[in-house]
Amino acid sequence: MFKQFSKRIIFLSIVISFIVSAVVWEEVQASDFRFVSSPHGLNLRSKPGTKSKRILILPFSAKVKVLKSKGKTTFFAERYGKWVNVDYSGKRGWVFSGFLSNFNPEKIRHIAAEFYRSSNQKKWKSQYKKFLKGARKYASIFKFKDNKVKIVSILENFILMEVPDLDWESDGDIRMLNAVWQYDKKKAKCSEFFCQDVGPNGYVSINLLHLNKDRYPDLIVSEAYGCGTNYHLLLGTKNGPVKNEEKSISCDPADMIFYSQIPAKYQDTFGRCGKTRFSCPDYEKRELSLYEFDCSTNSFKKIRDISFKSLNIKD
Image (cartoon, rainbow, N blue to C red; front, side, top):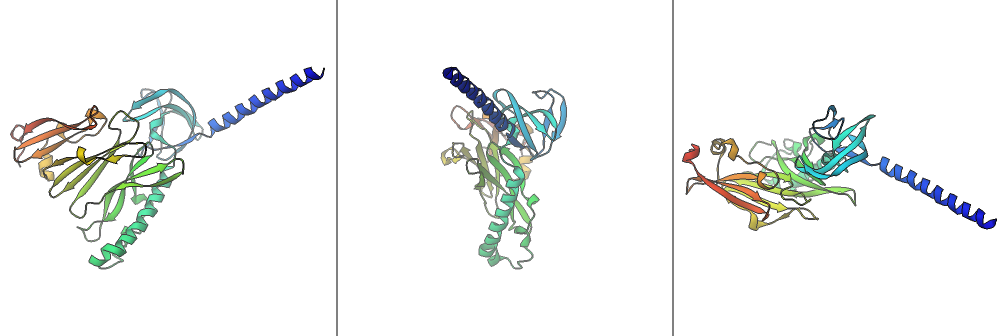
């Protein structure tokens, strides 16, 4: 009698334990919130896939609850993810998870704005004030609003931004610099990862993308100076993109008039593997050298030379 009673107690305990575990798992799944990371918003669709009906456009940084997913992780729209079913203010539909982040982009924008307001003020006191007069006139570089920080793109845990800085060539105007920030999921913190200033006569452009076939985000940094343009390759690792000077490409200098003569199909494009292409002028040979990213060697490769004459380019 006692043994039968004990067995029933054990059986009930197992059932209750299973039910509690199921409830806890349900709660964990239900609290799986994400944020829209596409600056242009994200289509909420009736079914998985881009051909299904669009219900509405989710705004940038909108908070959604992930309910379930479908299929395996795939590479789509230059990023990894899968189709997930989400709830947004009572509206349910499907989105591609590659455009969702674990962090609120607007909070990251505020953190970045605070950082650059503070760093610009320190930079002013230590550098600019020696050369420029009138602190009030240039106060805009450390008194700008959060929306002056523009989020260009978000890929995995990296954020590409345009941030305010003082333009030395103007009379106190703000210029925008490219900067990359990294979100640390374990510490739930975000900090500047890469930002490069080439001075008053230079320009830096950063592209955040998946260059090769691994899951780590990569960077291509283009530096334009009076003496030429350099394309630097920073391949992703588990700790972030790493610069490799041996894989950089240096080009002869060219102004906007020259580049405006280059046919559209030879203009710079960026994407995975051979989708990344750029051109470099060679004035000595009077040729335009075309390069693309080679996934087999993880480096830039020259694919052909075209004469200026055949392209009707006047240097």
